[in-house]
Image 1 (cartoon, one colour):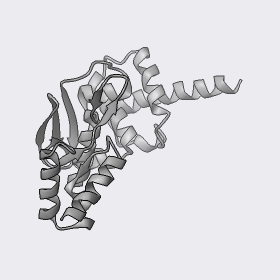
Image 2 (cartoon, rainbow, N blue to C red):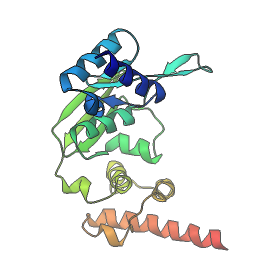
Image 3 (cartoon, rainbow, N blue to C red):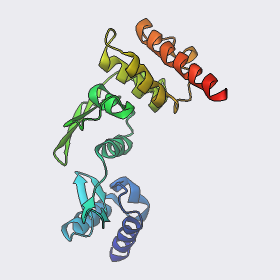
Image 4 (cartoon, one colour):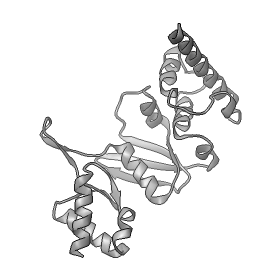
Amino acid sequence: MNSISTQIENIMTENKGKIYSIHDFYRLGTKNTIKSILYRLNEEGKITRLIDGLYTKPKFSEILNEYSYPDTNAVADKIADKFSWTISPTGDTALNYTGLSTQVPNEYVYISDGPYREYLYRNKKIIFKHTTNRNITSYSKELSILIQAIKAIGKDNISNNDIQKFTIFSKNISEDLIKDTLKLPFWIQKVLERIQKKNDEQTITNFK
């Protein structure tokens, strides 16, 4: 067990700030063995338990003179990975992702093809709300986030400034915003058309 414990500690020390679950170490030993080693390493202060089942070796910032911990979105992504859920930020969380909101939310809300779950991480709530699978598996993560952010603002509240920020975010999206979104509600398609038009205008300007 000491050998496995040393291996786990070394892996986490070499990857400070990365989030690990029991699943990441199954190749080294049985589930119960890994679970007890992670529990003991946490008790000894060698690693840090983030939430039940997730651990990290925090990075130390010389500038801030304190340890830094993974951000809430990264923890949410790791929870989803642990349970093989597909998730997408929604509401204010999606607005935060796309740059339309700079406020740090107290609740990070995601739609998920898994069950409804709530977690508390460093005084922030992580909430997973169940939705039908096709709502989040039909598109890339980036396009799903954009769609959820558009929904969060609402049909009659999207300004030209919002379109500009959405356009910046959409540069990371691989899909065609018009051709690949024909199953979405018509009003969302029209917003995506405005974003695509803005994208095309900027591309033409850059080539001049």
